[in-house]
Length: 268
Image (tube, rainbow, N blue to C red; front, side):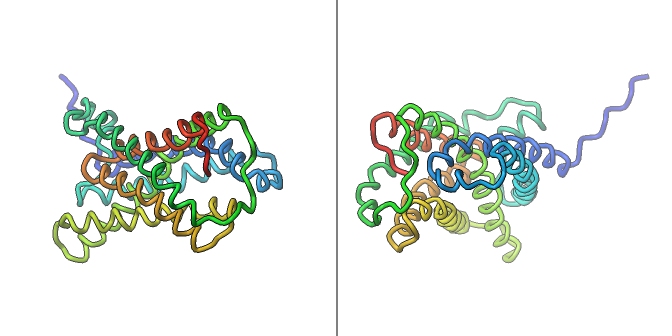
């Protein structure tokens, strides 16, 4: 007699599996970010009270727990509002190929490149608002800067998208849906995109403040330039899913942190 097929795993268990994978990948991205942070904030790294290796281990463990939990919550909330992680779910849960025709990864990557180029184009205007650097980044050659930037791009593409899009943007849309007891309209998604984009920019203020200090011009520049990318990544998350937002973010960061140093246009 053939054994009865095992029941399908509850959706919560599936979400936990996906969240665990994202938590581990985010932790690896945090470790990859460290050389870029050491380049951007050399004085702070010179004053670390414990060995850098220990800092990296502790940060990675913290990331697995915190971002893993945020990812799980985002996945749980996303079922109600049509947001989520379609590629990883197709691979790990449904065991089917993702719908690449709908996701359009090549176009998503190009949108990310376009966001990066838009930030580059706006930078000369926004840089006029900056005061002299209070703590300049460490001087490294273009190749080393590009390598550090490439490693840091994994943090932007993975960890930041898990926090700002999968968790925060989903939370905002889900919260409105709960309050209204109705399916949210496009305006709700756009409002969530804009709020998440502003908070995405605000998340870069500590690094900017370390380099220039915290002035109105520094705040405005940081919110504007990062907000451009945040809107694009938010739209990708809404229309094509988390992985396409990650791909777009990663490609934008490659423009900013790899291509620009290699052609001699380096800016924190």
